[in-house]
Image (cartoon, rainbow, N blue to C red; front, side, top):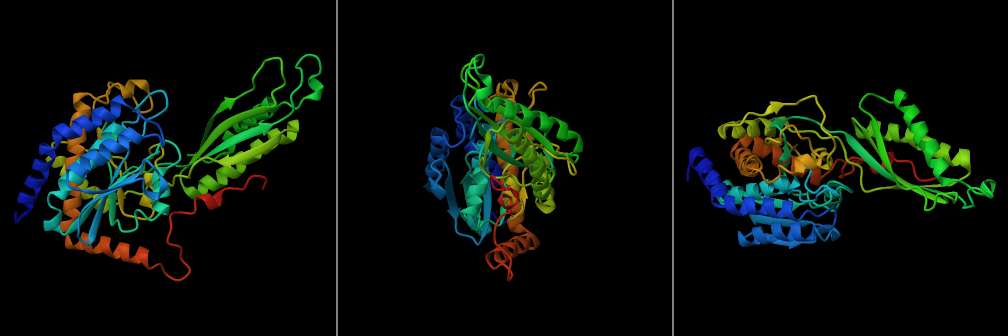
Length: 412
């Protein structure tokens, strides 16, 4: 193979040769959905397939039992593919992570077929808990992405699209502790923790008018008391705040935090706030990588809608993108109008369209990696980026965005 046509042929044939195994991987993940940090069978399926293909696989990286790294090749340019495989509680793969993960694995297998000729190292990173605590952020902090020059994945969706950003997000677990009492005989002797939550929930509702456009607050009460005739002594909730940037997320949380303080002040209940997982930063998609991906997708007969200037929901790929050139396009298939995070979307996860999305997504990602490797300008740009990250200027921190720093400590 000495030319671009031959390289293209080798990549596409590699995906074709693994197609049955990749579709089986997608279906297996779909059939046995596992939620955040419980993806033991899912991670094993991914690792086993890559080991079969000759990848060097390390399981349980960064002290996360369901995270993994698989590498093949020895080139100085490290192309990273992020595989997701966690599902949502109660509704399975309603975000299509079975498609996401299988496509990333397929891309790694296909690019590995030309890794030596392109002088690249292919690095598949198995990233758990995207739907919860943000596995990519933990892996980023642990240095797993340090040598990665470009990171990419595709995400299941009803349509093909490129270029969108995402909302930064932070989550908190809230607990109010009061004092129990008989709700009829001596309610005045109790401190009603549920009332504290009600005050806070009402205050958040009133706050929404004063929040910036793009800021979203939502949550659930997970414990509202145990008996109707007992003043609730404890209530628990989880609250999420989203904003256009991590900076705006910090500003919004200070306002929302005051609402929870109000609940404690009004009722006398004790308030405990704990961050849940890691903050997700807003997504920044690399325009050069996007252009290469769009061309590759076009060669497969697919047209991606540009969503530049729009925002998706939220993803921990945003944190990666703030440090490393990244793409996170969506790969589409017919869901009869169903949107992600619904049981209806889950039902289409093993459809013929979803299976094609796995294979086309794998091919387009692999061709994007090959395109980066064969462009001297892109190769130099990406390698320069790795060098700059490894040698930060004086006074600069070599880390992901300061998402935790924007939070107020409990009691502040």
